[in-house]
Length: 533
Image 1 (tube, rainbow, N blue to C red):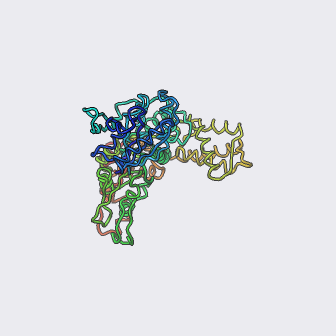
Image 2 (tube, rainbow, N blue to C red; image 1 turned 90 degrees about the vertical axis):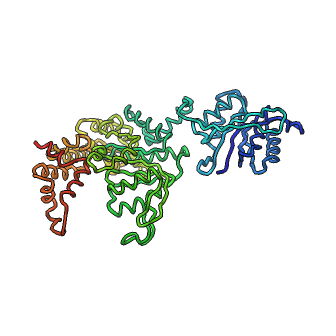
């Protein structure tokens, strides 16, 4: 890749006139004289009063290294020993510069400039504002010689240094605001969670696992992580999202890994697949626990080796992406029962973050209510507000024990949308609030009525994993468990459950079919029998 050096002109060290100047060691000029270091571009930072020196140095560099392009940049620094002023100027330059680390290799020269400037360059490189390594040059051992001296390239170990407090604190606040969609959340535990996610997202390309109940905001957070990394130039490609619960069989393989023409019936043309689409970017696999074991095996290799084999192809494809996985299931339990690959789980849960449900952070309902109103305005162009009494009435209801928020933020978003839609004159009144509150009560009471059917589900899975299941899955699973617990064997239970479908097959393995179904929830025959009353 082309090598680009960023450095300050040395007011004293780089100065020199006449033929005698070639007998002096001038760091910026000597930097371009090393045969083993080809510099394609030199971004030369200077003050206005140093313009003549910059021109002289540029001419000398052109004579010793014609292939090096010198680009002067004037910095508005009045006092080169004022830390705040120097740091601010260099920081502004770094944020405005169009870095492209995928195509260019950057070095920051820290030999020239005041000690203050050198410290600032070090800190900005350590913090990745300059996505670069440091280069330090030294004079030759024999003075007044044509030897350009030596140089050392330093690749910083970022874990050894603390960040500069004030300016970086502001940037971290901006980053966490991005992750929270600008919502001023009040729940301390959630805010600590977001702070840690910001640290991990900024300093790691390892997979991230987001867990928590349905509707807790996993998909939205994954996209915000992508936006944060892209704003920091840490990622260039697309954000690709897929719900694994919608993928089954060959369709799953094709959607994820792609296929070549003729790979199966209906494969009329090549398809690159979602992993390839995420090359250089981020892939969000929501409900990753729904993937089949074959897809899991191929995904593991794609994560570890950045390579995979499209369906029907004998040529591997490459894709370098960062993975974020989402799940509302207990993947540890699924791995123990064989429903999820343990080696894949070990690879994706290096960083696991559980997002709490809305009922666990009720103090955040008010700011999220304002956010949903803003989102409604953006979608429709109509501005809707609460009158004071209506807002107080609704917030009082949302904080009460009867507000169970079964679908978390989806319930809140739906409630706001309905109230805004029927708000006459753009004002939500007490009457509208009362109507919506009653609607939510009835919806939640229907869910609560199913509790008589799934006490065993909660006992086997645990209260939280059971609540994280859709109502359909809970009711279906409860019926299956009831029948399995009353059967003498897994085969007997399978024959009963699949009696109709097995009539249409010449051979079947009902026990294996039932075993695979139970493993999706981390359950087994032995576990259910052990819990029999």
